[in-house]
Length: 310
Image (cartoon, rainbow, N blue to C red; front, side, top):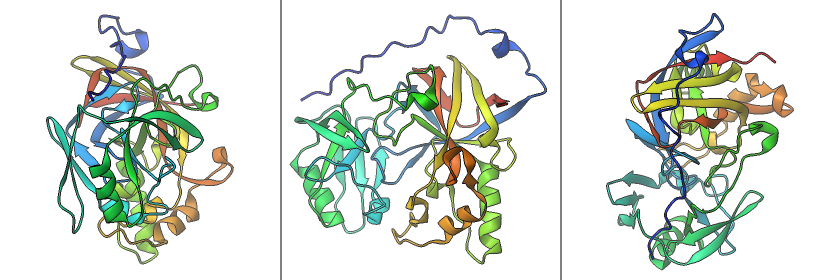
């Protein structure tokens, strides 16, 4: 059956920017550059680095649009199945190709789904579409237990926690709780400096699974940002950083091998306990979309970020 059309309205690109947009910025602003863009089409599987991505209501297009579930429709992740890290997608014009060690490639059409179903991600039970028996068998064979693949129903409204998103009705697909995750190259460099001091090899940003990676900040400078504004050819994209990203065991899964360790978590524990989350270990900031749906983000874009004072 064809996928239901997404009910969306592009933001009016003719709306003039406000004074904050057009100013060169105050002494409290910082210039940033969009170093890289990343999407993770299947929740908890490997990601894809893109040169350009469309911003939609739920974040970057195709990000966490699919999810692997158990026979009861409950999501599974690398926390219990670290080999999910070895499932690598490729997005093409009309399909997504999945590859994993020892498996034939699986082709999934981007414009087709099968039976309507329900799926559970954390505390949310949402409308979804099953992707059929062939997909189910492929994931079950590779991961060694009965599983199915589902796709998020674009008619479903799954909102971020209003305690953090405030006045913004931030929609999500199968992301944990927010449409975008922002990190910085300087934050990774500082983390790797500490990792090396403990006698461990450096890790890549793959461990932390962000959507947007910024240049131009001090180490973990994203922690203190309020908003980021990018001026693209098709209009302004305005993002608000709302909540530190608490970290579980997934960053300790080696994305190249699927093996687990503890060096990443131990290093985070040495300096990244965040009082805003009652001491949880954090890396990166969750963000919501204030303006810019149906506009493009491109690697290398310049932007300005404002600091939060609270």
